[in-house]
Every structure is written in C-alpha cells, then in structure tokens.
Length: 286
Image (tube, rainbow, N blue to C red; front, side):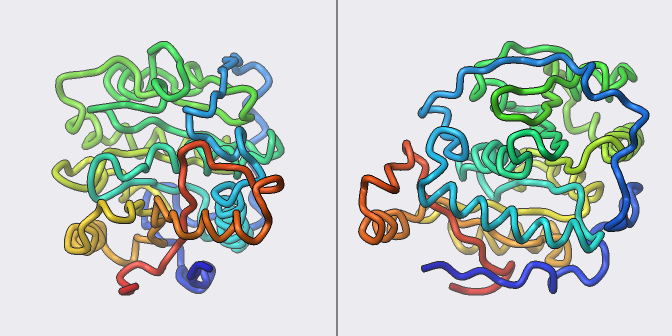
C-alpha cells in the first residue's frame, strides 16, 4: 500500500544542534506556565478546511496521519524529536494542510500539548484556513520582544495551540535571522510536548533553512504529480539530508481508491478533497 521507513533508526542523535538541545524521554513540560489561562478560539472546521483528522477521521488520509503520529511518538519517547519543521520544495505542495492535520493528530483531542507556529511570515495561510482574524504573533515577538506566551491561542475543537504569524513586516527574512528566534523556540519547547513549525517553501526563500537550524528535525512535503524530482532533491540537499526526517508524498489518489475498494464507502468515506499521503526516506528514489 505505502512505503514507510523506520523513523527511530534515522536519528541516532538529536537531528539538530539548535539551542533547544537534546531532550530526554522522561523530560516533562514545564509546569510553571498555566496553560488553562491561554485564551480559547473557537473555529468552525468545515470539510473545505481539509483537516481530515477532524472532519473525516475514518478516511485513508486520517489513517496515514495516525501512522505518522505513531512513528513520531517513538522518536519523542526516545528523546530525539520534540520540535519539527514542516516545509516543502515549492508553494502549493500542501505543507500547511499537512501541518494542520499533524497538529490535530498529535494533540489527540487535547491529551498532548501541541503548539503550531505559523512561521511563513511572507504568505501566512494557517489563520486563513482556520477562518481566524489576524492578531499579534511571531513577527511581533521577534520584532518587538513580545512574550510569545501572551499571544498564543488554544484552537477548539481541534485541541491544540497556535502562534500565528502576526502583523506582516517588510523584512520577514531578517526577523528570522535574529538571535531572538532561538530564544523564543527554546522557551516554547519547554512549555509544550510538541512544537510544529509551518515554514515557507525551501525555494526560492532561505527562511526554511534558517528555521530548520532551530528544530530537532524537518518533515518535507511534496505533491504527487506536482513537485519535480530535481526540485525535491535540491530541497533535501539545501536542508541537509541529516536534518530531513522524511518526505511526505501528498495527493496519493491510488491509495484512496484502495481504501474505498477494501472497506467500502460506508466505512471509509471520501477525504473531502485531501488525498492520502505516504512517507518515504529522504533521498530514496521511488
């Protein structure tokens, strides 16, 4: 059906030498910050939002995210990954949709404290997909020294937290080059079980490369029939293969048909426009 490589074997050491450092399996989220005080934002999760983990939890796509959660949980328990960058070689590969679904999967209906950071300061799309108004966020924290914990929102009914991009600036790439970024991510990593970072595409910007240095690992999203192989290989080379945990292939129509044929439409309904995904080893030809 799909090819998955053994994620825990990919990272014998922490994938990043960032300021967040190594993490241990027994390390707990710092209890000093009262998460219950974070304001809650209620969103209407419609099928067109493409968050199949919520709108279509029995679909093929949702099942793939549960498998990805299981693999990532093994890395978390082994103390190898807590912060994960999600990017793509090109625009419109579906990275933001993958980020929304993965956050929902990892949160497990609020059992885990998962923070999703909208770090595409050029063209933020997460708040748009969620139907939220723009508020202060990451750009304001990096530019004005705003405490990130003061602008985080809990997103319901999805059960995770969001740090939005904030007010757009004329120098977004320069903001990511400041020392404030490392300190911000280190502070947030101490307060959440998972920190997911939705970044701009790898090309033509360098933002993803800057953000990748601060995360424990990177998940690269490519779209079947859309992302040229040479562009994908270039993205892996730019990020550094040792930083790329795996490649999510988005838009797998064949897998969707396979699920429908095996289980029947009554048990596995449509994916509301989101095709199933598979994960392959970075650099491996398929």
